[in-house]
Image 1 (cartoon, rainbow, N blue to C red):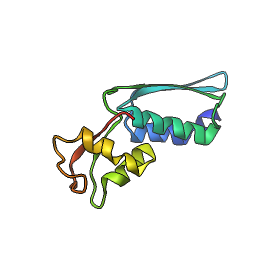
Image 2 (tube, helix red, strand yellow):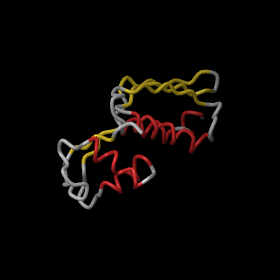
Image 3 (cartoon, rainbow, N blue to C red):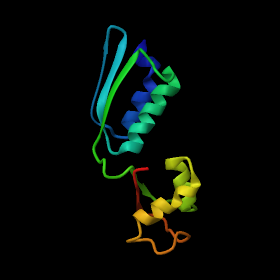
Image 4 (cartoon, rainbow, N blue to C red):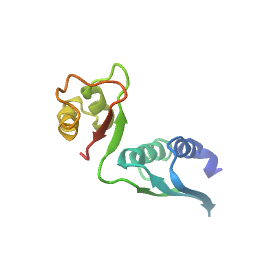
Length: 125
């Protein structure tokens, strides 16, 4: 029952390709573990858990590690995106686009000029 309650979390973990994932139920508590690529993906998992079980769910225990702690995320630019939209996605604040620009100054010369398929570092906030 608890596993089906959190099926959306398990599906997201699969979608994000969480490594070394393990799921088991003990005494009515769902135990989830694995390694996310970065902090952003770990946060996505936790946000999904909280959306289902509330801020402090007692029926799920998650131990999600992060493989790459040097960056918050890596982002491949899609057509129509701006640094402001990307900053809004990752930080919830479009004005933090300057952090992304600064972290990618080796490939970006102007914050208004980004191109599809560029791989950007999203720095830790």
